[in-house]
Image 1: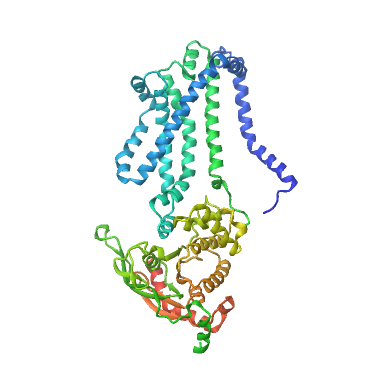
Image 2: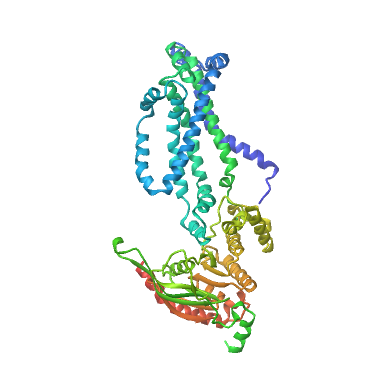
Length: 269
Length: 281
């Protein structure tokens, strides 16, 4: 192992900047075009409000409108994410271990993903009303699938020889699961969770869109029909922040809980 | 080899006791995989018999795919033979897994456990409480000079180190009979040579009964008291060679005339088998 020399850190920062440069340019161009879209094309402001107006609205309307709505939507997302994760994980474990169950359920599970969640959401509203429940269920419905699929894949990714090793030690099925299969599946499960984190936002918003009186969804619907597009975009900004935060939280948990997965081979062997 | 020198050598080796104390007896073992339903059975092992005495180092040599791993798995109790039986100390047992320490070609260290926890895995499975198991693992790692690596993860170690850790995991289970399935097969030649000497030292101290599998004839001659050659599939035990080279052995023995002569004899014995395997694809 070579200790990083003084210049090493600065070199690395420079390299990172070089890597980030294309993205920085893209983002700058988008920001500029967005900001001056109205001036360039002569379109009215409500078509695409300049960025600074959206940001001002996002701050001005935060206390009376956006933050209370965010609080409702975040609750739906978190509950849906938790529900989908638990159900998805248990279903993944069960279908992995019981072949009959896999044959009985998996085709239906896969078929359920072919039905657009937007089509199911109104029915859930009829069943569960305009409260928080249908939103949680819609989010859960979207979330559980990647968790199930990745759990199954992760549990199955254990090499035959490792199972043989456990068998040679006369390990119980319980020991094989907790000492080998579950930890081995964690990287795949986290891949599913990161996917789930992002789409859980979609689930909650779809749920709100078809019938709700609280949350960012109704705020957007009302603002849209009043041509207050700056408020619509401000709400979208909030949603994006929620989604990215949840993704980052899961990524952070991943880094903490399965730090071993990110170890790289010692270059000196 | 003169009788006297080989006897003198035997006297300081674990395998030196009078031989009839048979620990492992594979009695006319046959194994077929699949049945008529699968489009015909594949016969992996045919009528293989072998006896291994207490403290003896026996090696099975044969071309790839000759069924030597299958035979070892049957002895270990990981699969059951189609025909024949396995006796331990003259007894047939329903669950014989607890008698054996099994080593695989690959170290099979779990990437999420550090070396200490990996070494502790075996005894944890056997029921030693986690704390105590890790403590014992730390002790054996210190004893073998690997204490400095206890907190490292497998990816951070070289192949030789990893295989050593895998050995620690097996040794800690304190099984008297070791089944070693090409444990050095994945290592580079130099590391392999170092590991072979290391294993002999270990064996000299712990007096294990060892059944070793390899397709490396030099390795077989260097390590063993006795070599059993196997034919190409379906695998049969073909011939037996006693290795009366003096112990303790080190790498300097590799170029002695007695060593190369025996190596040549074993090679001649399995060469045509290997050709057959190669041509069969």
